[in-house]
Length: 108
Image (cartoon, rainbow, N blue to C red; front, top):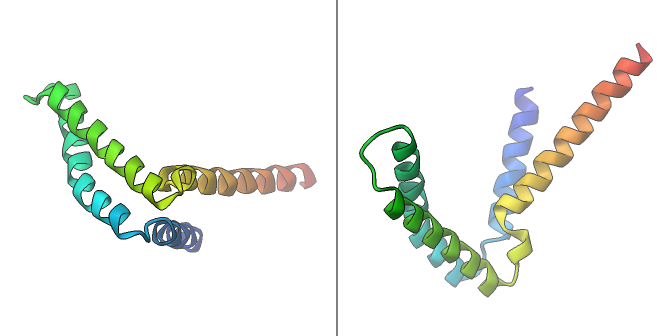
């Protein structure tokens, strides 16, 4: 199980390295990542009932996503953004895992 998790994490790191080569994309991600994290935290805090400005959190999060998309647009790989690739990777791994379990179940 741990080996499977490590292989998935290694694949995710490889995906990130391969889709963030252009310096402008790296700069936009470097600037956008804190906005993304703080904006998401503000949204979650507001939902949890804490004192946080929901509009500011959404604005920060959306601006960060816009920076990420712009960076990938500059790099020319919008359809290979990390969330898309991670979703594809995990859905493929999950599909193969459940298919193997189902085949094993049918043989038993």
